[in-house]
Length: 94
Image (cartoon, rainbow, N blue to C red; front, side):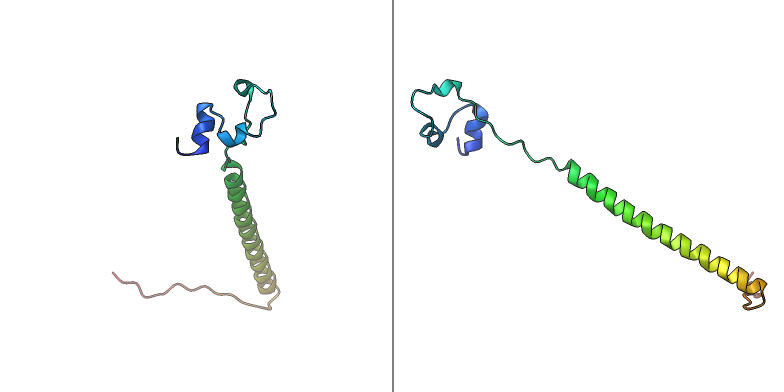
């Protein structure tokens, strides 16, 4: 076995851990507790949620500014302050 993880997975106790056991301890009854492997699902979901939330906030700000600008132009044009004309080109190519 090359790595200590292989020894743990096979149920063997490495020699350096055997030396740390108190005298009179039965090595067959020793249970080695290891930390669970890292799960990356939580951080990935968090990153996607934060990114989506930021994009939604930017979209809502853009929509709000658009509506405010349109309302401002409508009020100013109704009061005679500003005129806005959209013209289509009269030249049509056939």
